[in-house]
Image (cartoon, rainbow, N blue to C red; front, top):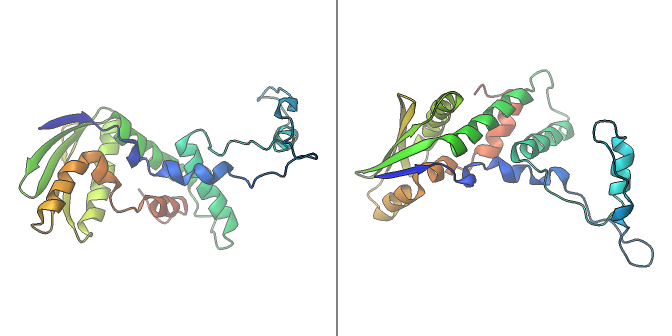
Length: 212
């Protein structure tokens, strides 16, 4: 048996989706070939500052951070930019709050759940548990993800409620020992990243096309 806390940050796939949120093209060097003096950007009180003026001054610096500082914020920021850039976006259906709630679920399941893994013929059985909101998040995430995995060519997957969470069962659709070993090596956190559907899923939630 393996007992481990599901802390693998790979599940938070939406982290990389938000990294573009603050990306900008490199600024041209100042006259003489040197970068603008970033120390000249004035100190400001974030609550009362003129954001536009401050950003204009900051952007004259050549070195500007590209990360949003928080993964969920970055993921939401990228989705908002995509929706604004798409003239077909139906703003009467857009629901960014639903996306925020889903990202909270991902955080709860990734960082605050416990997972007890057992090997079974062809794969694994994992009891994933938590308390409070984490319990509800576990049940939502494992139910939806197991249904997606079941449509995959490699995995059989199912989830059922247990006290404090859910039991996730994943087995290989073939007798390939390498695939069975992969399932067991991935464990709970790794299996939850399989399918590479998260980014498209997040956009669909934000568009109001999926009720999670």
